[in-house]
Each structure stands twice: as structure tokens, then as C-alpha cells.
Length: 428
Image (cartoon, rainbow, N blue to C red):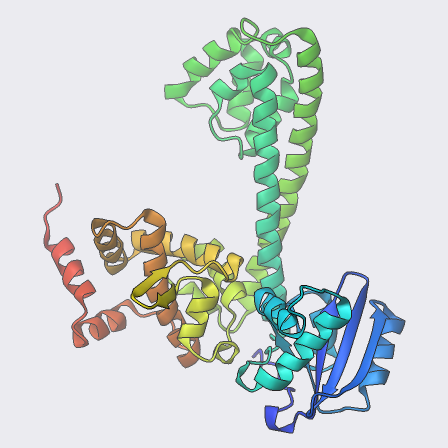
């Protein structure tokens, strides 16, 4: 059974010194102040083995040290957590305001950034939440699912470039196939890189290609064969064909390699998810299925203490709106300062959930009838789903649709009334 990593953070009441850590790619700046605000250390060090040894040596004089840093992830945070430092992440906007509090003139230096963070931690840090280190299995899953999305975005960019190249010299290929994220379309370009090569290949090779790649459909086969036969009737000039066909072939080879790596990522993600002790919790979520369940576990994590409350989780995910009140003005608007990966994951899950759950579909439909956009309705549904998810990881209980329905009925939720109305309507 996988166990959660023990907490190693120094309690706030025991902290005696406060460090502001201004990080960079190859070096870092540190300013340390005591409880009275006096600067007791101010130094720079390289992001290297010797540099971090220097950091440990200089900080060893203050064992009860807390560190404020303008990020919650990355190489610097990882090194701090490995050294069992008590880390307080600070939002970049807040860090800028703390610096301006020290230098309203707009002056900006690494020393000033570090000093502002150290002073902010000393004066305001009692209300901050220290960064909870993830257990190794959840952390690895979190990094893999995030990197998988990055690779998917790169695949999308390559597909867009491929379609643009084909539009310039090979319109018949775009007309014959709709989904260019499928490997069979990339193989088509590699097999028939130009309109002339496609026409010269002949009907027998066309049919063989369609059958080999399982693209033969009675309803589309004749249309595709007709497009192939006339592919060279409408084409670009020879210089454009020669240049852009080289680009298209290169992009297809890149896409095939990238697709193999994505399959490897998904295999590793599935293995990690299956071995995770909380996979049954996230696997029970309607609409999550094989892709979103591991992504949700990696994005949210399995430790409710990282958030403290459902409201914090909802704010980090961007589903909770922000309020603006001044005089007679009182309004709410979307929260942009949030974890973008988590917000995107919740958006996808909410869209799948409304199709897999009766009450989710009824809730979404009601919000749309109230005039909300598709994205806004999904954000409202995601707000409710995060409340359920936080309760699940707190109690370590899988999602139970019947239990949720009983709770809705017990509390007189208007959602259950909508659900009953929608299920009572006859199918048209």
C-alpha cells in the first residue's frame, strides 16, 4: 500500500528567520531577514551542485528558516523540497506588489525581489499555506500528464502546419480526408507525396492503401477514388509542389514519431494510475474514463491538506469567480489567475460529465437556458464537481451516484427536480 510522504515542514510558531528566494534559470538570489526585519544574509549562488551546497552551508546557521519563492513548481522548488525546506509559494502578481511596497519608484533588482519576498513572509506569512510535498507516485503522474498535454499541443501545431502546406500544393488530399490527426493520413502523404505521384499510382494501389489502413467505407470509397483520379487537375506550380511536398513529408515523419511517444506516455500513465492507491476514487467519476481520470488525479492530487478546503481548490481551478465591489458597484467576473492546466482538465471533465450523468446534463441545460455560454455553464458545473471531488478525496470514498441523489433529495436541491422532470419526459 502506497503511503503519503510524511510532512517535514517547520510550524509557523517555530520559524525564526525568513528567506526571500529570487530564482532564475542558472542562478538564484537569496535574502534572509530575522524576526525584527534585519537582513542577516544576502547572497547569490549558481544553480549547480556546488551552488546548492553553498546555499545549504549558509542557511545552516538558521535551522528554523522558511523560504518564500515566486513559483510553486520547477527545479528550484524541487531542490528546496529535497532539502526539507519549508516553502511558501507566492503568486507573481503578489510578489510584484510586495516589491513595489519596498520600492514604489519602480526599481527592480534581484536583491529587491528577494528582500520583498522575505519581508512579506515575515509580516504576512502567518496566513499563508506552506507547500505540501506530493508523494512520489502522484508527483510522477502529475508531471507525465502535464507533459502529455504539451506533446498533444505540439502535435496540433504540426497538424496545422501540415494542412497549410497541403492547401498550397495538394488540395485533393485535404478533400479526401477530414481528420488529419489520424496516422493513416500521414501515411497517405508519405505514400503519395504529390498529386502526380497519386495519379500515377493507379486505382489498384489506392484501393490497397484504403484497405490496409482500414479506411475503405462503401459510402466514401467511390468519392475518394474519384478525388484521387483527378488530383493533378487542380494543383500548384512545379516549384511550389517540390518545395511544399518536402515540408509535408517532413511534418508527417515528425508526427509519426510524436505519435509513438504519445502512446508510450499513455502506457506509462495508465500503469502509474492503475498502481495508485486512489485510482478507484478517480476511476469512479462519471465521464472521466481512461484519459481524464489519470489527468484529474495528477492535476488535483490525492491529499486534501494541500488545499485545506474546497473553496481553495475551486479558486485554484478557476471555477470560483472573483468579486469586485466599490461603492454601489458590486459584480463578479471570471478568475483568470489560476492553474491553467487544472482549469482545462476540469472543463473537459465537466463537458464529459454532463453527457454521462443525468443531473449533470440537467444542470448544464438549466444554466444554458439562463443565458450562460457553453464555457460559463461548464465552469458552473465544474464548481459543483470540485465540491464532490474534494469530499471524495477527504473521505477516501468513490463516487456513488445513488448517494449523491439521496443527498440532493435530502437538501431539497433544485437539480434533482430538474433531473426528475427530464427523465419523466417521453423520448421524441
